[in-house]
Image (cartoon, rainbow, N blue to C red):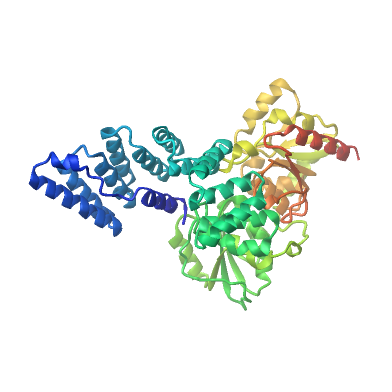
Length: 530
């Protein structure tokens, strides 16, 4: 299930309506009203249990006709609206519940889940914090707040503390143990995380989130054959996988014998580039491929896989299905599922020096422009990456921290930074007049960036999609990694099996970048002096 479905399961399991209609409140009503209110309330409970949320909302609203200030009834109305996908109405109902009972932690919790469903993390955090003020031992609130902070806003330390509190309060709660396993992985305690997942799945074998966490732990440890079957759980767990309903049979890795296979996009640009390393293996199975990818990657993929047809990803699934039908597609597979067929052992990763091809004409343009800078190494740099939900703060650096590198003699530096690069460069130049070339047109499209990268001598970057682009082009690349990075970079070491030309330089402690910069500066000076 995706994150929206997961939120729905949380709200339905944590606060399923109960018959909370106060006997004292009912006794204050006339006898006929007591009977009618109780009947309406019980009908609401029955409808809600049956998944008939619109009917349940109508019943609970009918009960409110007899007592408009019943906070429990308003909360149940909100739960019913939430179940029916009417988020605005749900939020209004929870607000009314809080209005009539200001100290109502469950209503604040439900408000938080509604805010998350609407994509408003800040409001969700405020509501969860209020729920915990009112009920400090509220396990679900600690656990959900921990998840939001660690996964959606990048505030890992604070989020991990809430998950640990939930674990202390309820050591056997499966959802808490699941989140705890993710915390352990992010802290670098990967083997311990794996043990937690194993114990959890022994009792809850269908817990998709735990299966995915086990997959990520195994992948980080390089246990590929065991990991890939569990990695399929990403299609059912909360996360950024967009579930597809395309009408083609799932490819199981068999010989295609001339059949047509749709490889459909999932996750971000970097993931699509990385998993595309399996496209040549797929084509060797004798089929014809239709590759769906992000629009930014269409030129690169079309040039690099000329025997395939490349389709730009869109939000219109019917359009994709129609085009696939017109192309005579027989089978489908998510790009992230390809490694299960081709990357089961470390030895299965080909030692190729690049599988994507930049535009030859644009390469020639950038080759000439770089040559005009004069003798010395031509080095591309990117100092910031990620978003709030992908822990961009811990992955990113400040340009001022790069001064030991930028002062290296016999090097010319070129910005490969997207976003507010000009602002960062202007601020640095005021303090240190070190030239970093910022050629805006190079970062306008991914294809143009690829052409420039292909002509550089070296790329130095934090963890961004640029790393995948440079690695897929076979470019020598040094990557600055935070202490506890994503699974694809492995548990330790300087090499990355997906890209033989990449060198990994890791923090030894969370947040400590200075030793990494000092090492890069020394190594770059040595390289430039040759």
